[in-house]
Image (cartoon, rainbow, N blue to C red; front, side):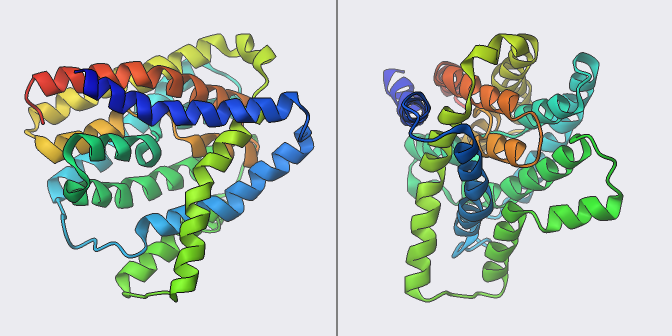
Length: 313
């Protein structure tokens, strides 16, 4: 029990340290708000695509293919998205805040927080099934996020315009390029592999520092209701329903741990980056990331403890 708590804590604590560094950057005025916004945009168009490419490059998607698990994951994300939209429409009228809330509810930090949990629980050698799920779900998250934020940014884009923006979104381009290397078995020169690997490695720390430097803590009280709904929904309701459904469907072992990593993780860090870059409610998106990440160390521990004792893995 204690070891599982330590696993969850070690996955969360580094993220808070990086965000604290961002707060220090802001307070010491090493960067002004316009510079921070430009840096955030640079991460969105340069570094996140590299991370998406790297997450797929070199993978053997034929191994560890689990059709039942993938189908369950895809259907679950679609159901969560539909429910998130219904709830958001009922409680929020501002279109930009609606977009940020929907994204904060359905889009989990599967890669950054979910994968370390899976590795520490069952070992890296058993991670093939989880990597396959990441390869399917993360691009799906990104496509849905682009569509959502375009729809709720205040304009009336045509379907063709939405499709164009989805296909030209930097994260989608990175994922498509990575998938192409898998399908056509393309290998890059070792030097380029090293560059892309280094860029992918720096993406999350840089995004977290910028997140910390972008949040205006004085305005947090203005979004209390929306923030509460997203934190409870992301960390309690979605894992409870999703994991109980997974147990009833017979998923066990690495399959169940993969779904635990997907359902119980906090909101994705990139949701803040994307929200700010696409003229959504970046402040609310950032607060959702911060607070879901803060409480995830406790909620993930509880979910791990509960289902470990129930013999799910």
